Image: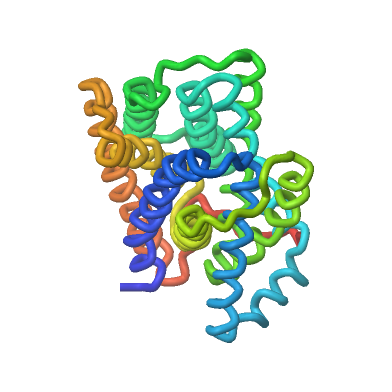
Length: 328
């Protein structure tokens, strides 16, 4: 089995692991805010800052610091773009939750990205997606709507500024799509931990000033809160994005964003276990649709890589992955 075919087997599970870890973040943020009145930008700055520390320790321990410097020297504009898009998506998503409610923010921001990337890939390849692919996409998006509207932790809540919240959610979805597309280009030539460290560093430079300007407590001596913040940084940021970028090495961007719909599913499951919230029957149907779609996407990606390998030999490029031509 070639390296690309072996990697494709793990691409979707790696993205799914990232989505599961992201899904735990909302509850942890809620637990932090129950103990310390930190603002969302402050918590996000802690999250990225602690993630960057953990990532740099690992990168230096692996003697990969040179790769990090090479990446920053050779692709500075692309690293900056991915880092800014990632940080912007997180801030806009939380703002959309505040203004329009959890359902609108989740469905629009998470659901728009795979549609945008799918259209972009179809235009680039000059090929309409097959009926099986369209059914899988429809199943995943329908599952997202059902899970988002059935969760007890805000599924039906509407925020105070729904129109503005909807616009912000659309902007978040666009940034999410851009971050995934641009990040996939970098991921195919960069070790995941190195790439995550570089883009996280950009996010830290953006979020720390916002945290300082946003008011509220910036520091805490509560050991429980510090442990929760460490979890946010190490697991929901450093480990999650490393897994995500590892998956993007062999997975199309539209597929990756669809697989990340596991995030609201894991959040709902965690809320049921920790907070005792019950997922409505429609939510269970949505969960089944998302899981079925993820399984179908995994088979689709593996089948596409196998077909390309047979058609063009061991040096075949992955389907839907354009070769890099820009210097940035």
